[in-house]
Structure formats: structure tokens, C-alpha cells
Amino acid sequence: MSQRNRYGIPHDAVITIAGTVGVGKSTMTNALANALNFRTSLEKVDTNPYLDKFYNDFERWSFHLQVYFLAERFKEQKKIFEYGGGFIQDRSIYEDTGIFAKMHYEKGTMNKVDYDTYKSLFDAMVMTPYFPHPDLLIYLEGSFDDVVGRIKERGRPMEQQTPVEYWEEMFNRYENWIDNFNSCPVLRLNIADYDILNDESSIEPILEKIGHFIQQSRKWRSSYRP
Image (cartoon, rainbow, N blue to C red; front, side, top):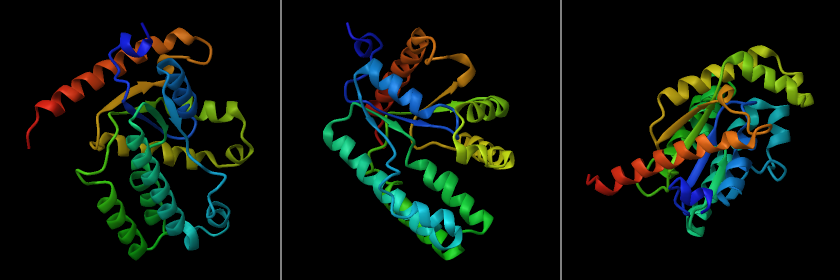
């Protein structure tokens, strides 16, 4: 019996991974995809025409960047469901508006007109009954010290040069965002409770939780009549 069948995880499930920088989203995405024989949906950075421009001029390009991300994630989400599910996503479409666009607006690198336009576009595309929301969003969380420790450990040059105050702000924004998130079921996992890099068996209790969450969610949706 496959791990997917053992834990009652449907073959067409769509699971998205969310969390701040350094919590191990890519590691979790690949581990779950391998365990469940699912495909992965990864963020495309290399083909983004606005990223370099954005880092050189936040105020000019923040709106363009966010609209580009929204369009690409929307197309990816549509493709996943047209394919028939069976995917693990690295980062969700919801973080773009709930974290990044909001941060640009509040810090003054996106003006109110652009922010309101972006929000209206996001709501029209995503916050409707017709948008295919994931079966489950897995939110990876941990203490701020644990998160910063992982960022330092992986040693990416641009991240090492970033002031720790930025990571603290991002950490707090993510915590506030997930506390108010309700677009799909959420499973919160503390990164201190597992070590899938060094202990493959630590994925087992995670799979059990995923199966339980998705089964309960689908039962509720099938019996709910608005």
C-alpha cells in the first residue's frame, strides 16, 4: 500500500506550503511530493522580467512585480486543477496580497491607487467561488530564533546581508497573516517538531495529519449546502 493510500490522502489533492523565509518550504514540498508521488509546483524566479528592476527601484516596480506574480500563480493554479490535482505547491497565491503587496503599501513603496487596483484584481481573480482553492495549506512556523538560525545556516549571500530587523518584520507579518487566514483549511507545523532532512521517518506523522485534515475538510464540503 502506498503512503498516500495508507493515510487517506486523495490522488487529486492539492497542498500548498506557506511560511516565512527560512522555514524550509522547498524541503517540505519535495519531501511530500516524493512520499506521495505527487508533482511539485515551484516558484519561477529566473524568468521574472521585473525582479532585477524591482530591486533597483522598489517604488517604481513594486506594482508591476506583484501583478506579474499574481498572473503567474493564477495560471499555475488553473493548470494544476485542469491537470487533475496531485500537486504540492511551494508558496501560495495568498501570500502575495496578504504579506508582500500589503507590506509595500504600508512602507510607502506602493502608492494607494496601485495598491487598491492590485487588491481589486486579486479579489476578482482569487476570492470567488470559482477559484480552485487548495485542499490544504500547510503553514510552517517556529520561533524567530529558529528561523533566523536556519537563514544563517543555509548561507545565501543576499540573505546574509539583509538586516535582522527585516526578517523580524517578515516573521511578524506572517504570524499576523496566518492568524486571520480562512481561504482554505490550515495545518500548522512547528519546524522544531520534525527533521525530514536527517530523519526520513519524521514525515510519517505529518502525512497522517494531512490525511486527517483533508478527509475532514472534504466531508464538510460535501455536506455543506449554502
